Length: 553
Image 1 (tube, rainbow, N blue to C red):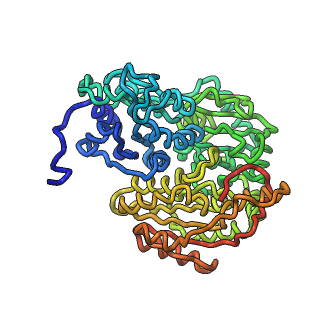
Image 2: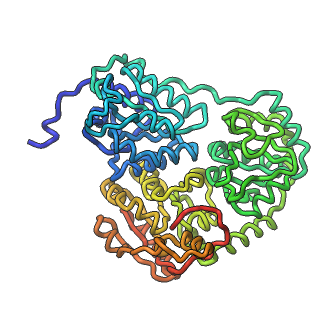
Image 3: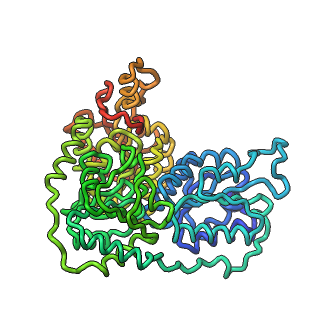
């Protein structure tokens, strides 16, 4: 008799009620690892038609859910077990908080009445809800099936109408396994509310400023990533160049003549924004990690639009602040601004200055990034990591047409994000066809999540991983040299990457020279399946000019 034949009769538990509610909001996949305490969250998955993706570490589950969420516009969902399983997901929870990504984490907890007993039960944790609550937007320990389902509804309300950030629901094991006390109607998805519109008087003030501007500039952040159509229309009407933060990359098609790309980290790009007589900032906190500078200065008036009132004066005071959904507010601005488009500003000089600054940072790495970018299909989704090849080069030179096509974490800047995020993005594509997905990571970053190659193989994905090998933590090595420290802990042993990929059941390839990179990458994407392309770089110290802390590999 097989294990499948011995399954216990199905029971309508709180676990099922929670997952049924999640499914009713449109979620089709969950990420996680089955464990002793979370089995009643796994029991209903097949019956509910939810795809279970078993990662090899819960950090990978969180990043896989993030990659999936960015493609679908729905929150990523992670199931962990109690104790160490939940703790393993904490880096992903922290990432989702810093990058404003929708993530729902569901875990079991000790039974009601067993809190803080400290008697040595399996996976015992002092206070799991407080632990996650210190990192997430909120963390709630529920007391009944009704309470658990209500928490799911509250999470989706946040994802739809507020600044999307991670939330955690802890379900005590006795509640999780108990018969559900939730009627079917209470598990139905609640209607989506209308987008939050701006205060009319603030909108009028903004229209007056923008209408009178001679050198307007738009900066779009992650909050504007799904507002591309109206933002493009506004840019064209104003003749205004568009700069984006990395989380807002390609909110406006980066091939558009007014786009200056996701280059706010470069002085030449920041100068464009700072010289504007009216600067319109959409859905961005203008954080230091996004700028590689303490702050963005503004010589003219500043109009800021954000779903969160707390963001309107953060890091840059607004002349006019508008609380609302970026797409809805920009539509309101379009109503008030004359329809006759102004002549588009010629940004050729600015674009050339940005390109020159990019190439001056790490010329060899930028040249490699340009080769990689040229070999990618135009519609490729690229998952990056906190690796020099990404943050020093590819993020700047890669021009993309649609938002959420570069999966990256500019603020939390974690290692080990790229591969699992790519897995989640690929799972979000149609079973047949879909956009190609490529992870571009450094060797140090890949070592943080190498186990997820097994996940990609097991899920039968078409996924290409590009490993740029600079021998360890090259930028940190340079930082040490710059401080007069003899390099320590940064020159790392490298495996035979091609053989390692093959051992996982993937296909390994090596591009030993620059001339081989493009053809190797194109061949890997064309072949399908899980592919790894290893690109060895010079293993000497890097030549980064900035001392701004970034990644490692």
